[in-house]
Image (cartoon, rainbow, N blue to C red; front, side, top):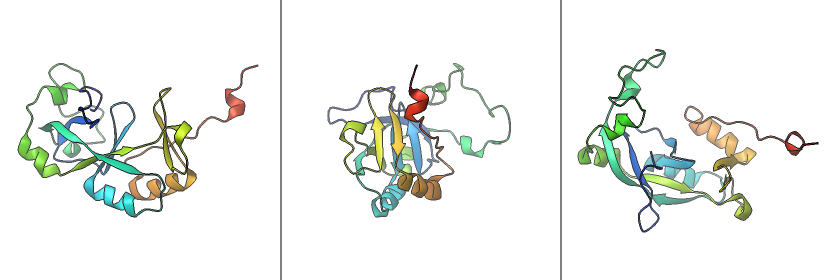
Length: 163
């Protein structure tokens, strides 16, 4: 979660999440794109234009090994006390040692569509906060993080037009 707490004075996202497992790329909060340190290095070496990174503050990292649950099961192994998904995190104490074990996490700072210039990833702000990828970026991300991302086509101008 990145939408629960405000950004710091320096504009840094405050992250609340489970650990120790962190996927290499995560869509958190309302359109925030986060990556692990190892995946940031891969992105920096990728032939993608316009990527910038900002460190993320790990404000609340809690131990919950949900990735070990049976992913084919229709029900989670456990439900949080309050019944809301964020209660998996908010109902547990911050674990500083676990946060350190996870290592650095990064926000991918994306330009808005209006300022896109040569960027391969842009954000549609403030309207929807969707993230748009160039065909080149979509191919690269699909090959290197397709297990963690889902892509959909954008509607064409003709389907948006109203008579």
